[in-house]
Amino acid sequence: MRLSTITNWAYGATVLLTLASGATMLMASGAEERERAAVAQRQQFDQLTASLEEDVYRLTEQARGYVVTGDPSHLVAYRREREDERSVEQRIAHLKDGGASIAELSALRQALHWADALNDEQEAALAAARKGDDRTARTILFGDEYGRELDRVGAQIAKFQYMLDQRTDQAVARGTETTRQWRTVSEIMLGITALLFLCVLYFVLKQRILRPVVRLSDVVTRLAAQDFAAIPPDFPQVDEIGDMAQAIRIFRENGLERQRLEQERDTDRTMRDLLSRLTQRLQGCANVDDLADVVARFAPEIAPDYPGRLYIHDNRRNAMAQACEWLSPELSRAEFPPSACWALRRGQTHRPAGEMIDIACEHLGDAGARLSTVCIPLAAQGDSIGLLYFEEPAEGSADGRERTGKYLEILAENIGLALANLRLRDELRDMAMVDALTGLPNRRQFDAMLQTLVADVEGTIAPLACLMVDIDHFKRFNDSFGHDAGDAVLRAVGAVLGESLREAGHAFRLGGEEFVVLMPGFDLDQAFNRAGQVQQRIRDLRVQHSGRELGPVTASFGLAAFPEHGRADRLLATADAALLRAKAEGRDRILVATVRDSDSAAA
Image (cartoon, rainbow, N blue to C red; front, side, top):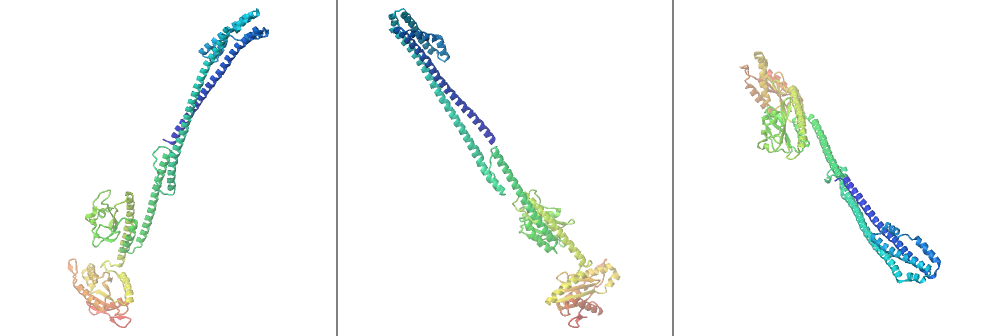
């Protein structure tokens, strides 16, 4: 019940009790008024009866005075008083109008009857006295009969007064009792009114207002300080306090929602900042190793509870090879074919567990259904170039997973773009630094490699050998079989030179039919032995073109070594001089450069 309703009911009850108390007080006052009226009536009747008795005795005295003394003044006074007397009916009517009862009037009428009888005897005595018969007059007025009649008048008047006293006493007693009762009722009403007022005041102010307001005030104070852990008290009653509690509860819920949104906004801002820095770092990567280091550093920050791996597609083996991992993932092999992952098959994110049950990927092994995993393909121009693999935590809200899933998609998009740029950069570099026919590095890459190796060996005095190779009578293949046949010979020789060293990337095609092999760490004897092996492998070549064998292939070799043949930056010129001398001496041979002085070498 609302406080306004309680207050209205209490106010109504208080008004009713107050009115009832006032009515009882009025009733008590009325009873007192009736009591006073009864007393006043008694006094009035006492005065009337007293005057009646006095009139009787006064007439008797006047009559007796005239009989005894014969003084005519007594007779005059007697006559005057007799004239002032009223009749019996007039006296009774006056008393009846004053409220005398029938019994009381009957007693008074009898007294008046005896008073009239006395008047008759007085008239007879006076008449006898005027005739001179004093004896008779005195006998009448002083006789026993006259005395008895006089006593009867007093007795009847006393009886009337007794009856009047009885009635008056009863009226006064009833009035007093009624007054006492009404006063008691009035006092009870006033007590109930005061008690009701106190109860309502206690209940409304303390129980329904003070205590709840104190509790709500504490909660409001904490909520104002952004302490949303404060839980508003539950006031189920439907009143203003209940409305306040509900409003505070809604305010707290809105505050929690606002706090959650602010946290999400801050988290989103932090994640976007991380993704922005990740993108900047990825753009600065020079190779795949740099990219893997960046991903391994940023991925745990973007998805703290998501262990995972980064796979990059190896074109030569057609396999997904692990580039890096973070937070120690439990599943997924380090290397697997693209067909072992449904994300790579479908070209979109794949979740084999969760709300949408799906098929687990083969690269997860037998325990693929034990964890909730996420596979996100990295694609460039429709080709799968990599894969991001994550293991979702067992605990977490659906909203949190969805939000993290969006960050993972953005992460995958940035990594895929960076990886595609690296591959494109490598392809462009290969196109600029690699000979398209033989697949060997070209002259540009040779100059860069030689400059690097020269700087290294001159600082450490480490050995470095340079082997120049020229195919003998190469023009014969072009003239006899065509340029395609010559290209086949170049590719075959290039393959032999490319496999001549354990470390790839040290055989180069300088142009035409000329090649060069750099052998860091090889002294002159080691380089000569390796040159002999290469020479023999070229001799063993059987190149066919269009179903025909092109004939034997041979090559001339010029060898120079640092530090035996002078400065490292002149090795190419020294080896080239030895090559010219080998060709001049008949080809298909290896000639080592000779030392002419301490600063240079010549053939």
